Image (cartoon, rainbow, N blue to C red; front, side, top):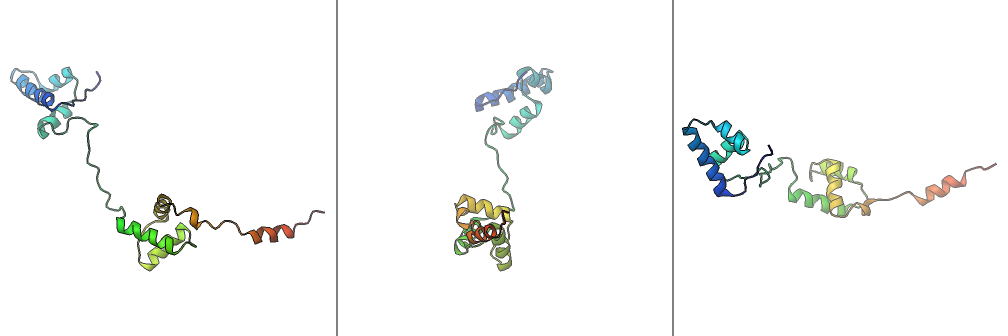
Length: 141
C-alpha cells in the first residue's frame, strides 16, 4: 500500500487521537497504522511533535556545514583575484594560505571565482611567440 502524505493538521490530530482511542479497544497502534497506510514511526512522530511536521517532503532543517566559508572569506577571495589577475586559482589558493588571508582548497577558490565570473580573466592562453619559434625550426625535407 502506498504511503500517504498527510498535509492537513486537523487530519493529523484526528489520526493520532483515533489511534489512541483504538488502543483502548485492544487494537494495537501497529495494526491501526497498517490499516490507514502510514508507518509506525510516522504515527509516533506525529504524536510526539503535535503534528508540526506533517509531510516528509515538508521543510527540513538543513544542517549548517561548520567548514563552509563565511561571506567575509568569499569576499577576500574575490578581492584577491581582482588584485592579482595573473595567478590561476591554484596558485591563488596557496598564496592566500601563505599570506594568511584565508585557508581554502583550490577547488573552492575556483568555484567562487566561477560564480563571480572571474575565471576567464585569469586565463593566459598559449604564448604566440612560442608557436612561431617552434614552427620555425621544423624541417620538411
